[in-house]
Length: 530
Ligand SMILES: Cc1cc2nc3c(=O)[nH]c(=O)nc-3n(C[C@H](O)[C@H](O)[C@H](O)COP(=O)(O)OP(=O)(O)OC[C@H]3O[C@@H](n4cnc5c(N)ncnc54)[C@H](O)[C@@H]3O)c2cc1C
Image (cartoon, rainbow, N blue to C red):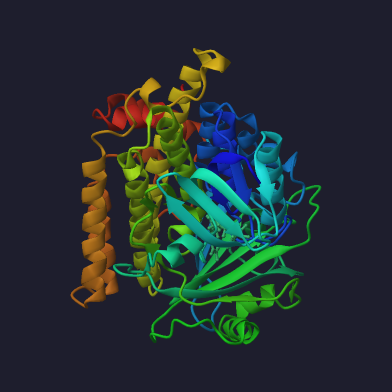
């Protein structure tokens, strides 16, 4: 191929295609090179409000309306019929041999769109096609064999013998990233979480609502269900859970903390799953008729990162840069946030020259996202041993999730306003055309909260505090929180559900008007105007 592209993208999965669309819409040329052909299996299926809002933001910022398809279930299902709906995050706490008695549910309220279960084979295919509609070149069935980078550009050698050249290369090829391997960038140094997993797609999974007496505001089967147990957790992500569903499959996986140092995958994942079901008979009932629709994947230690995620003319992104654990469904949000930051850096770079520092903030963002997720997940695994501890940690995660979503929504509105006031032909709405990012002045406050929460868990881990005393410490910590709307009840440990209706939102808006600077702007910018 003689053409020299602006950006070569290895992989045409969610991260590769999202980035390609943003760049093509901004006038840069891209070529995606994928080892496989669409449609093909991919994992990472449950969205969170912050994922959807980030896609909505990017659709406005890069003037790429097709990205808004991933901003709500309603818009997605019109394009990709095989997806499922997510009306809630459900967490049910189990003990070996018993029936579950404790739970949390976070129904997705009217202030965020209903989330989705992405059937990735079809979503990734659809998204890659949209990149091609915008002029991207997609080469499939051509694994990257070698990458050469020098001062004149980048050349990628594919398995089928083709050589493709570009100015810059983004490695979005996931866990086995060729660039991370070639440059010896992989490491697990400093990572706190250690877990492994088995997963597949199944048919015949019984809705948990038919198995348990536990009831939340929404049906468990209408959302992403997490079975949480001492030492691990399980996901149940149905695609058949709405009127007109076109897909009988359900995504199923179990993650165990590695306590014995054995980081290798289970040799017999089917057996590991069967033993798990024997230990938790109520979950066993849910799966008594279930059959795998594809081979089980058995993954050894899930966690890894990269010493460096950007370099001269290259960047590792999303799963190529690192991964922790899917517990809080943050992967696709991170993917979208990094695609956005990277697209902006690339557009700036092509406008203003090839200074390496242009990408420094992408590296910082990726490392921060990994560290934040590691903190949330490692402590969650510790907390699973005792319901009250998990009940507390669940709320630390909620603080993270709610403030993160508010930040993105506020930014989204800034972008929408700027887009409304500028001509379509004036290109993407980059940071220099927007006001300050939201939540300024709030970071120290929230970081201090996370620090205190971490110290309580450390004291529990080292035996200084028992579970009950640690839970009591969390109650004291939560009593001091003045940066969340009280009407949401997020830090009230007696509340298992967070059904945030419009009356609670109105009360939160009233509270935000009186809140201190930083908090005021964050919530007034993120909550619906009242
Ligand atoms: C077990 C598990 C569960 C998850 N669950 C969730 C969830 O519920 N919610 C969520 O938000 N996130 C989840 N994630 C994260 C999610 O999978 C990722 O954020 C998302 O898939 C984006 O990944 P990616 O595009 O970087 O890479 P991938 O999806 O891994 O795609 C990599 C692409 O590169 C291609 N490729 C590989 N090697 C080569 C090569 N040599 N040359 C060219 N192409 C190559 C592959 O064919 C593929 O198309 C989960 C991740 C895991 C591991």
